[in-house]
Image (cartoon, rainbow, N blue to C red; front, top):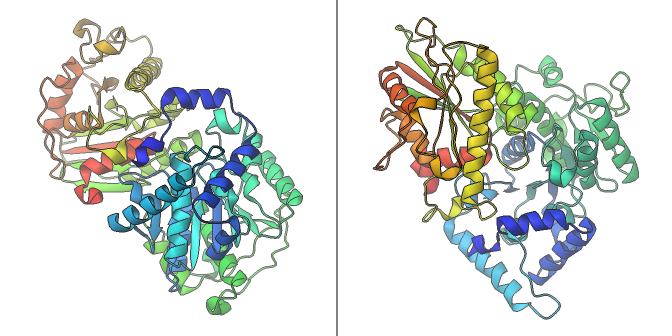
Length: 550
């Protein structure tokens, strides 16, 4: 039933073309909230921490929620997208709400909206709007002490921005993403993100490029609200022992320092009794060199904060799964800056490990990019990882999505996603050709005439690279599969004890698949990086860890 609230692909494109006044859309969201039985004033009771940003906002929320839960507070956490089950979006004390609770609140909100239809209000809220309204109902009725709310897209006109009086706001790292909605420059995107600032509500951000930081400063001035720049995590480690983070990767340090400031501000604003440990160790009004935004204070993190940072878990972000001979490196990076961070993490986590004694290690990239993202730019950043194979597939776990309601997305069509995968493969092959140069051993790229030939490429025109004397003889091989399950079946070759491959007839007949299968079967170690899309990551996790679907 929830999936009926999704818009189909054609309608979504129409909305983009005919987008009206975004402020009207925000007013419509308030109308839906009131029809569901709540007023915007009711949300003031939730003591909200509102977080936006291009990358790292989910991780920042996860750090923040875990820290405050350590203070014995009952936490609500609303995030998007979900990876495996839609219930992940609405959490209480760090856990997705139960199926029973989800069903209870879904029907409660759905029925109220149905009952309040009249000639002037005939519509139902779309998928994300509905879940946002439902999350507010859950948090209020379950009596949480606070709610950490992650913005969906942007900020100013995001449907979460009906929140009037959050306790504190945060902006994680900014970059280019969702350009068709937010704008095609980082300044325009910063303007959207700064739209969550509220009068008198303290806001914090991390180190940003000068121009978007200036936009945020202007937005704070217009609000008006105090805006502070978070000092590096190094500054906290000078006054305390080295902080251990539950999320791997150097880029998580920026998210952790933002979480520390958000947690501290929330505790102080609420007059919480545990704040005596949070003593400023330098004046907060300092300017960071020539920057126009004052530096937030460095303080001695409490034991609850230190432990919270260490205990934070956030699926699908710099996550490593060791499954027998196969090691999965899973990260939902999907912007240029986040993919750069992913590459640094992967090279440190995977490529610095000791090689197998016999040297037979195979590295595989599993990639998909959706929406208006520049796949070529993302793929180019992944070249230094020296993959033996690049595998592309849509975000569908199976060829048919029937039975996987949580994975269904009616905003895309099958033809579109398969065509996109082929385009991504073509971009990769082009990058590999540039890397290799005009090597006489390199055959012509595979020619595919339409989606119908996806599983029937011409074996005489494959992108196979034969360089017998090279250390990695199959360095530019790429394959496209119609779903995640087929891709994993080929990558694992039955060597992942956690992945139960379904019986599949007529699996990929491409010659690269045959030659690669032999290497994968015999390799001492298979290292797989899954990245490019959080939806892809969700589908992979669903298949690799059955407990996530329970």
